[in-house]
Image (cartoon, rainbow, N blue to C red; front, top):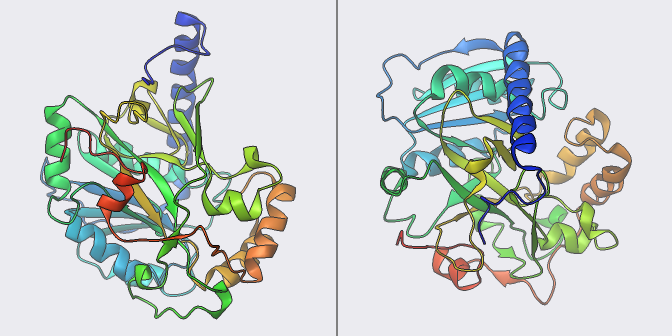
Length: 345
């Protein structure tokens, strides 16, 4: 199953429209650049082959110590953060980290395309020709043999294959029992608390316009969107890219232009390596965050659709069911078809 086909596009006319759309996104990035203010820029002297990580955060002090540890262990050389008005010490913590460059803003996260415009400017300035990882604070990337082969090995292999991008499925993890009854120590390993996931119930199709593989399913579809699965959150992402100033994310890291960067999954032949973003959204602090987001309305476009979703999350529901699977390792995810090693490992 190749994503290189022009299915859903009208040949050259479709390619022309996508080029202009990408240019409009890049113009947005340039226009929104003044919304972010530098606090600490430690990017001077970065090696040409430095692996960079980009993230927008708000009130993530509980997750960030482990997040940084995870990606440092994987081989990230430098982090670029945009803090969106945190009031829990997040900005001060990040500013104190020697491998972090920090910008802040109080502008609308939603109107900045959920932070994509802000990060796009930093990627344009600092990411060109680097391998760039773009993730949220609740996303932990793993891939086949990730515990013994770091990002330097993975990106070197990708370069050798002539590939400029690497795909991953967002896998929602959750505890056994009500979210509100779960205990989590700030700064700790979220995987000690969130160790269950839905092993099946996923669907995929090609996006008719952007050509990427559109994946849905998992616990959020099962629990919150069972009556209308088409509205369930999108799970496909392209978080790791050999960046070029002509690149532009469209919606989070779900879609990217140029369109060829979407060619990251091959679910029929399993010839392409892919990873998983372990999604630690469902820590017990989700109840408080959901209540806040109902008031801020910054994390979703359709406020009516997602109001019930956040109301139910604020109640701290139990997401576990008899079909839940306990998370073990990358070999388990490969066996379940949620990750592919291709000829990488």
